[in-house]
Image (cartoon, rainbow, N blue to C red; front, top):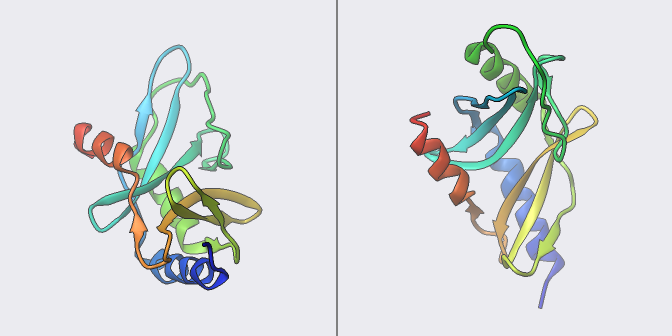
Length: 143
């Protein structure tokens, strides 16, 4: 049975942990169009990815990975700086959803008027759940 108390604990946990989140090295996918995601790390684990929009130099909303044609290379240091700044300005939305198949709460994190991350938390609201697939991707890319 789901309890509102556990949902509140999940939100509070993410709010407390947010100050420890940091931007990892961008993962850039190249082709005719370029797309950049920035893994958000907590300790040595990836929590979620933030989409980066090279046109604006800022995060893009969750669900809107930006694919653009660009001249030259993206500057990883500028991307990291932009996402770090957004993380400092980010806030936790005071509500969450429950994902039955994963047996976890999902707490949205917003920057300005965009939701930029979904942070997964255990069903009892006590532990952050890493994005294991993204964590492996980060380790494969050596970022």
